[in-house]
Structures are given as C-alpha cells and as structure tokens.
Amino acid sequence: STYFRPESVGLVHAGGQTGPLHRSLARLASPLERQVELGARVRAALSYPVFVFAISALLNLGVFQFLIPRFRPILESLGVELPWITRVLLGTSEVLTRPGFWIATVALLGIGFLGLQVAVSRPEGRLAVDTLRLRVPLFGPIYKKLILVEMFSVMADTAAAGLKALECLHMASRVANNAVYEAGLLRMGKAIAHGARLSE
Image (cartoon, rainbow, N blue to C red):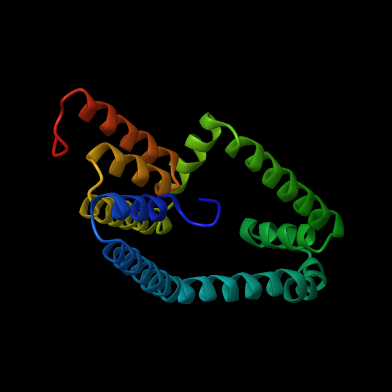
C-alpha cells in the first residue's frame, strides 16, 4: 500500500477472495489507461489558454516596464492635467519598475504559500481551500468533472470486483482528493449503513 493506490490494493484483495486474480488486474489496467488519456486531453485543452495568458502577461509587463516610462517625460512636459486613466498607467508603471515592489511581491507569495500549506494541513482549512478550488471560474467545472470521473471509475471497478457498497464508497472517498467530495461520500456511507439506498 506504500507504492500503490488504495483502490488498486482493494481490487487485488477482492480478486483474490471473490474470483480470478487476472480479472482484477485487467480492471486495474483499464482505469489507468483512462486516466492517462484523460490527463492528456486536459493538458491539451488547457495548454492554449495558459499560453495565451502567459504571452499576454509578458506583453503587458513589457509595456509597463519599458514603453510607458519612455512616454513619461513627454507627457509631463505638456504642462496640462493628464486624464485619470493616463495617471493610473503612469503610476502603475512607476510601481512596477521599482525593485522593492518585486521583492515585496516575492515575499508575500512565499508567505501566502506557507500559509496555504499550514491551512491545508488542518481539516477546516483543507475544506475551505477545496471548496474554493471547485468555485474557480473556468477551472472549477473541469476540476469537478475530473473528480467525478475518478470517483465513479473507482466505484465501478471495485463493485465489479465484488466489494460491498460501503467499501466502494470508502475507496472512492480516498481517491477523490477533495475534502468536499470526501465528506459527501462519507455521509452517503453513513446513510447506507442506516438503511438508505445508494440511489437516494
């Protein structure tokens, strides 16, 4: 269990108890192939928007770092009050060209990263972070679909291997990798243990 995922261990264990082991191993190969194919599709779908965003960020940074400072003396020599949007652009450019701004930004990012790690290490912090991940525009819906595909693939494979519904839900909650869905699956398990049906 140190090197293999919980559902893989469960499938092999169920195959050794309920039927031929080679069928369980074949079931293991199928979701792994699906995961590789799904991961390739997601990377292909996200590569273009990420590339466009990165190029756009670099171009804007270049404009504020090099182009706008060249126009500053010309605009200030006109002797007239500049429009507010022009003043905002000049002020933003001045801030971005200061080394102190980048030092402070790196320091804040480092502190934020460490704070996030501390928050995720606690149950309530992990729940808040995972809830936020599900609500991120554009990426949130994709993230939800990935979780659902992973969960239901595990549930289908473990059920086909002969495991009981509670065991299938338990394994699905361990591979969901999201506190919101883990809590939901655990609530489902408790309800089923008290007589509720899975469809409910």
